[in-house]
Picture 1 (cartoon, one colour):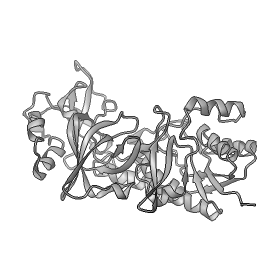
Picture 2 (tube, one colour):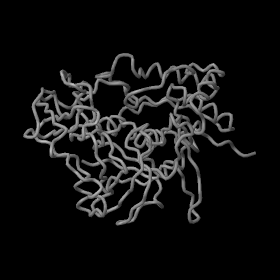
Picture 3 (cartoon, one colour):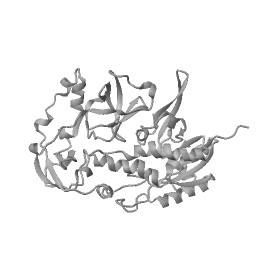
Picture 4 (cartoon, helix red, strand yellow):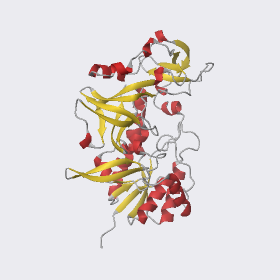
Length: 401
């Protein structure tokens, strides 16, 4: 008789991982639940958000209901070093990181996966809405990362930094299910998580007052806020002409956001630190009295200036080209990596839940450039761009300045 394959499920105390564990058990796997404690400092965390102890109790209750072993592990130290410290360093540089992507790469499918393997796991499973497919390429197994069947919940973007080695051991049991179906199954099983709200905010930290959270490491520093007019000469660019036959230098130039200077702007207020603000941000500066809403269109952490634009369509919010340093390009599919001086038309996403955007990837000696068919709103340094061939995510990278 063949021994059952053992799967360790990351039971988070939410409905998705709960149903993932149930599905695996129904499929005949030997299932173990493992809850990880990753954060317990409540500085800057909005009241009642992400109480880890309540989540642990819910995860334990699900394990009892499903009659599977339950284990607990404290990963607070590696989470602080690999995710939270990275957040602080990125904000200090004036970039806006995505901690959820880092949490998956560095914690769930690295430190957590290693702990699961110590428990004899053949696979590690999570409640992510994405799919995995195994194919053979040149006689070798290759693991495809596919979008979840539920377009409204697809979480493949959050896994855009996973490697082939990590995908080899990963299972996504609910990736081909719709969220209502997941809720229905949990309700029929009378799981305590059946009607629990989805978690929001930073992975394992929850919703935060970001300036207060960041002030644990980054000092408040008063500076000036400037309004940049929409008809500024800074925004006069003929995109189509410049991108008709772009040189490396043209791509480099167009990939940078406009460089703002107080000379082109009008002082309209003060802020508490440029590193607390991000491109496209609307709330948090408490500056009113204008005909249309104000949005952050640029920051300078060296001069400690924040630049604003008035209105949703302010040209300072839009760019058509972004650049990724060659050292920060990640290939989920190594066999599909672009050779230097080649290009390929793909679909791209620069933030979670953004509809896929058509564009061309151009691999050059000075980096990977993405040229979108349409200008994109709020391209933000430090965030991840992920590119897809159909519904398969094949690579990603950190957007540079």
